[in-house]
Amino acid sequence: MKITDKFSLDGKVALVTGAAYGIGLAIARALAEAGARIVFNCSRQETIDRGLKAYAELGIDARAYLCDVTDECAVKEMVADIERNVGTIDILVNNAGIIKRIPMEEMNVEDFRRVIDVDLVAPYICAKAVIPGMIRKGHGKIINICSMMSELGRETVSAYAAAKGGLKMLTRNICSEYGAANIQCNGIGPGYIATEQTAPLRELQPDGSRHPFDSFIISKTPAGRWGDPEDLMGPAVFLASDASDFVNGQILYVDGGILAYIGKQPK
Ligand code: NAP
Ligand code: GCO
Image (cartoon, rainbow, N blue to C red; front, side, top):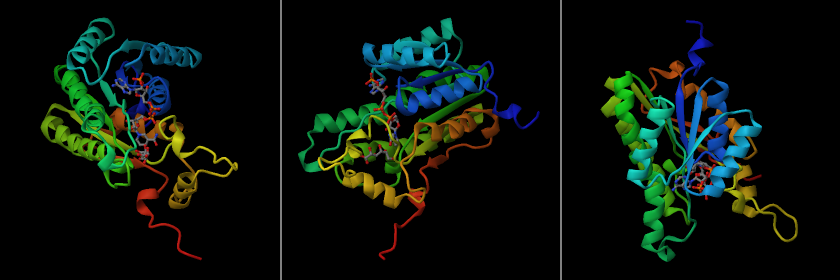
């Protein structure tokens, strides 16, 4: 097989959760351009509509489901409908996620639990729903969208860091439990990416200057910039394709080098 054929997703069915915009849309676009049939879900009809418009403008015939990933019954129904009407899911990208930036001592437990539910329990629910079909098919790819917060903490993101740290270990455990069924489960750990989720961290100040956190990230990132969702497209195709069949349980950090860098030395 030619090496370029190993990156082909022709004939594959990919479910990308929460992929109406942002990182999920970019990853789904990449998988589509590599040949996959795209299915996505969101929890709000207006987001579904926004996503379908975006895919149509990209020339991608995506199928959409209104489904909250924390609702196991709804996820099982969605997966069953996909298997009936599109085909068995070959690739699952657990992308749907939320963040609540609240100092831990001020965060109520309901908010903490909601972040854990969406960012950790839901990837378990979705993986559990697609694994039987992958086992029947004899192969599968699960990609969990982790985070720098799978490795590092920072103020106000206790629930998110706990969830993304757990998602790193869930990734390793799915690898351990299902590697023998030829299912590869890996993570992508984006650095700081310019999406709606991080928009508050990049808001211009009243005087027109950069947000202090924006300047902080620029200084902490060797690439000297925020990531773009498009920076995740190649890594996603790699982990979704035959090219990564012997890669399992790994987190591929796509972060411009931030995790490797202690930070600019004082002048
Ligand atoms: P985003 O712009 O906030 O988009 C999140 C998407 O998830 C939306 O389409 C949203 O649609 C969907 N979603 C949220 N809750 C859902 C639920 N309960 N059920 C189904 N869909 C749900 O986020 P993003 O920046 O693209 O991030 C995508 C993923 O990458 C997340 O897991 C995030 O933690 C991770 N990540 C982001 C960054 C970054 O810097 N942006 C870095 C590392 C990791 P609805 O609201 O309509 O459901
Ligand atoms: C934050 C940011 C980060 C990014 C991402 C970094 O408030 O620190 O939202 O958490 O979303 O997860 O990898």
